[in-house]
Length: 396
Image (cartoon, rainbow, N blue to C red):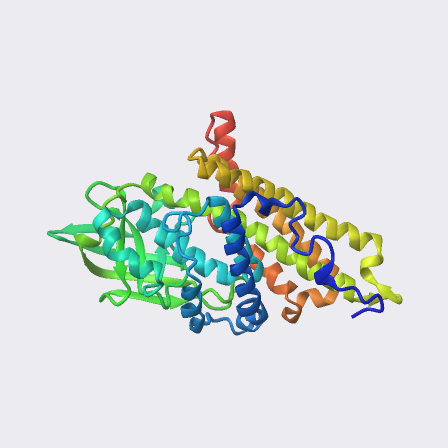
């Protein structure tokens, strides 16, 4: 602590919510948010750097997350999309990898079942998914298919009587090294449409291999998946997943969640940079007393609040059933660009210590690169918005 004896936790705006956006939540939602925030502060943030350095997911955490009961706050628990978004930002603020684990299981995997499975399938599968007795993954991206996956899905599905035979490969599939189920999107060879299937990871012909040597989201166990004549019953074909347009129903909502991750990343950078600036002394005084340091802290806060303002409005539109794909695309593109600026400023404030994971900022800085890229690249989301405001598609 510096000679000024400032208690960083008792400064104004200690929560970073400079414009009091959380006051838009109901009393019940604010109480629930505080419960989750307290849990994350105690159970995740103190250990996240160690887990990140190890580069493996702490599977012992899953039962404790399950006790917190965070899965499907909107569809199942009746909370607002605004509450779900702010909560996801808080998970990210504690650690981006843990937020991504939950985002894959809850948003992408569970969201696929909620949006695209039949009522009968939902009744059978969702109880264990909600309770996290079954952990899920989402298999869309492929080794040779990322931004063009809508029209370029190479994984195939062939109907054989009352079964389907899946062949192909998926890449960057979070949770897939330890998940129980994976939703696989594959192109039906009969009609050339992309369909969705629930695959048990113990099914013969299914294999997953952890992707090593990542510099971002090191806690998340992304995997390469191979499907070699994987046979599943038609009962596991998601009855509402019969074209890529159906898949987009899931991606629109999860793209919104990534915008909230960008908010959480910036709030995390603000937390670490402000504490460091107040406690770190150079030239006999805290570096927070220097104008250029204050300028960078204000830049981080301004970026975070402008991002949060956009995400608050988008979440309100989603609650009203009015959110559009291009609005989610602009939010993802804008908030992640501001996030990149914010984490760079935070790393700069920490100087050399900003590249050492021990100080947390290096983890935040590195993880931001994954958030910037997934759920639609900056370029693709920009073109989605560009098409909506010009009426002209500039895609290749």
